[in-house]
Length: 155
Image (cartoon, rainbow, N blue to C red):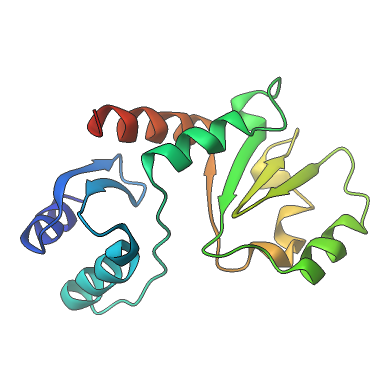
């Protein structure tokens, strides 16, 4: 992650901070629309890997938390999958047509909130949700930490 920070700063990003060894990065750039492809290009240039990069602004991270449909869930039971684009209506309908109880999910824009009471590792629902293809999923504690990090760095 140290190398990644150095590469991104050399590419013109500022305020680059990584969060643990999780692949999460907080940074600043003047052109928000250009961030994902530029970060992807920097990573590819230095590693040879072409990976998906999903970006959320500080205000979007705050919205993710405020829209949580499971406010009483334990952090280990709650995850958010971040999509690079809005989920396809047919995939949402297919996922809703199955009773996953006690597991649940809610699609809200480019996020899918996952309530998995027995934990992610034991989830029956998550591996079968085709609408999560291409998503990156973070547990609730990580979402909260990233929100704090991104909002502290934008002040």
